[in-house]
Length: 351
Image 1 (spheres, rainbow, N blue to C red):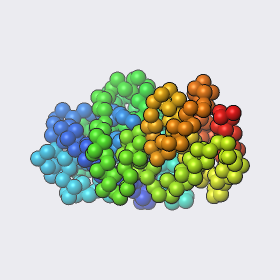
Image 2: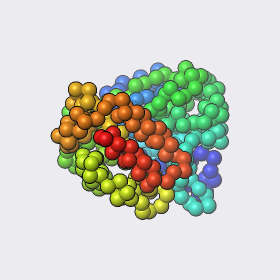
Image 3: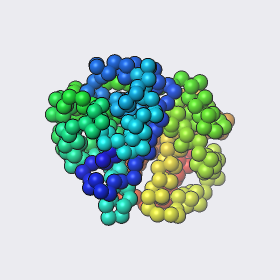
C-alpha cells in the first residue's frame, strides 16, 4: 500500500523508483528533521524542474519514518523503517505520482493527472493508525497535477491532519495549485546546487562534459543527466548541424528521423526536437541582441554567425510558436508533420 492507493493488498504493485538524498539537500533536510516537533504537517516543496524536489520529499518522508535517526536528523538508512520506505513496502508511506497500477495488465501506466479517487484513498490512509508507530506520511508529486476535485478533496486533511500525519507536496509550478491548497502548507524552496556541486555530482555519474549538460539543462543537474545521455547527444548533434546551415537544410529528410516506433516514441522524439529548437532559438535571440550563447556551448561559433542574419521580431514569434507546440504534446499529433512545419518556418527566418 505504500506506493499506490485503493488497491487489493493481496496483489501489491511493483514499487516506484526510490531516489537518494542529494548532496546539496543534506543541510536543509537535516535542519527540518532535527526539529521533528515543529515539522510542518503540510509542506509544499517548490523549485524548477530537475533539481531534486521529489528526492528531497522522499527522503524527508524516510526521515520521519526512520526508527533510529542519526544525530543530524537524517534517516539512518539501515533500520526496518528505512528499508521498507526505500523498498516501497512501508505501510505508513503513501506516494501519489503520475502513474497507476493496472490490475488487468499487471503493469504501471502513466497518467496525466492525480484524480479524486486517489486523494480519497489518501484520506482513508491517514485516518488509519500507524503500523510502526512513527508517523503517517503521504507524498504528492507533482501536486499541481491534482485535478480540481482532487485538490478540493484534500483541503480538510491539509487543514486538520490527524496527529502524527505529514503531507509532503512537490510542485514545479505552484501557481497552478489552488490558493486554498497553498495557504494551508508551509512553503519550502528546494535547495539548488552551485555549479561546482552540480558538476562534481555529474562527474561522479560518468558525465564527461558536465558544463555542457548543465548549460542545456539550465543548471538543473537531474535534467542534465537526461541531456548527457550519449544517444540523445548524438541525435541532437545531427539536428543542430542541420540547423547550423539553414540554406542546406533538407526538411523532409530531417523530420523523417522522428518516424519509427510507436505513437508514444514518436511523440517523445518530437518533444526532444522542440526542446532543442527552443534552446537554439533562445541562443539566437541572445546573440542577435548582442549577448552570448548560453545553452548550446558546443555550437557557439555557428550560433554567433547565424545570430547576425536573423531579425529579432520573427525570431521571437518563432519561439512563441515553439512554446505553443510544446504545450500541445499531450494531445494527438502527427509528429513528423509538426517537425516539418517548424523546420520550414525556421528556414524562412533566414530568407
